[in-house]
Length: 440
Image 1 (cartoon, rainbow, N blue to C red):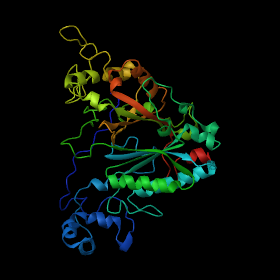
Image 2: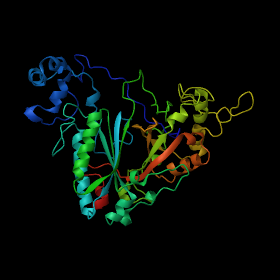
Image 3: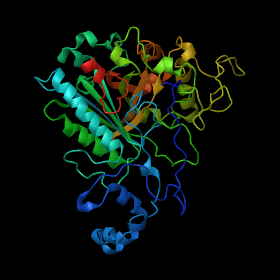
Image 4: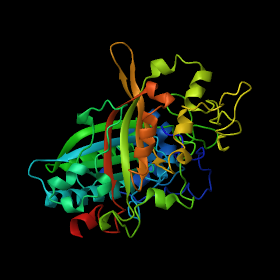
């Protein structure tokens, strides 16, 4: 929940393409054959025209009577991210409305050979689904009517993976276990893991479809260790692009590093010619995943003014308490009429600033979560904290240590699960994620 790292802004509101628009003729994703000879491309293209027909005459008649090409209701489902590339998708991709995080452990007896075969299967499934195609085998039809919906699938390796595959010499030093923090109340069963998968999409069914396909692909090679579900505001829900809010109602991530900044690559990506990192991590990144429960009943008892003092920013617009707008530089030395600091010394936004932590920076790309209520009506809700950096010992660790020593927000949150994973660079065309590790 650090202030210095904001998620990329959400996309602008989506408006239905009008007749004659370039997007109205056909959605921008590859088609895949479906039962009855109707492709997903055709189904998406006819969605806008068939809605009333389906309601009046039933699904079979509606699909049969629909024209081959019609104006879709929106272009939200047609968004498509590329699987192959220099970096894996889902890192600098704008926030998704729906997401799943999962960790897998290799099955007893599974080693390097089985792990490599699994990453081949996973990579091919991710490529197909991100292109709007059906899974190669046993597709469940959950996403049958939808386009790619900006789906991304991202893969990483945990510390324990290398010992189980005989690849200890290829384990990065940066993957050493995180230190203990005083705010930790970690559930080991929901932490770490051999393999990590992040799934994001703008449609809940598309995201679940990918999660189910990845789980089925694991087969006998790996089994689920833990899995968590998250969400963010849907694109187009606000009148203009803006920083997302968390479940405390605060704008979360105003100072996120941006790819256009000159030092972004140095802070986020392992260099193409790595020094301390093994060669297979070139163009990759390290991700810290934390399940942070928000103690909302306690937080919501505070006045808005007290909440703003804890964070150091106005709740309404995210501006620093020292004045200006959300993007105005915070004045850490400004005092009020009585000589007190306007931004309290223990305010979350002050403590997490890069210039207060030796330049430490992370690219945050979180999800909110809500897993129901306990018997007393207390919500199990908070943040699935996901942050990216070239070196976690220079990114996440120094900031979290400082938060441990006096962050005003600490009494309102509880860290319940944690993981650190090495995420290699993107797959080459025709290749798979991690290929340089297994075949290098």
